[in-house]
Length: 95
Image (cartoon, rainbow, N blue to C red):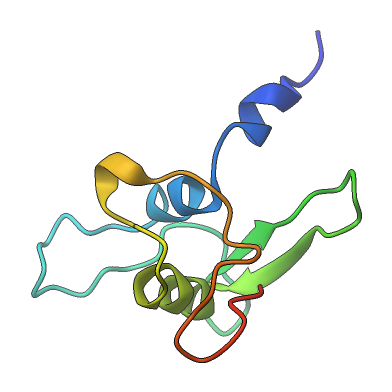
């Protein structure tokens, strides 16, 4: 019995990111990160693929900024797709 790799590959960055955010307090509350953290308490998320060598970690504040300030939709019913080449206001949108 092995790991179901297809299950991991089918989850988009946005879906994996928002599953680790506690936004239960509403729009006015702090939204704490529930995923991996470094020794200073900053959240990290792994992105990219081991297959093409692009796998690496990014700090969650950066990913949150890109997800919420790009032309990519983060509306809950539309959390799909890749952030790899999505344009952002600041430039290239690359993670």
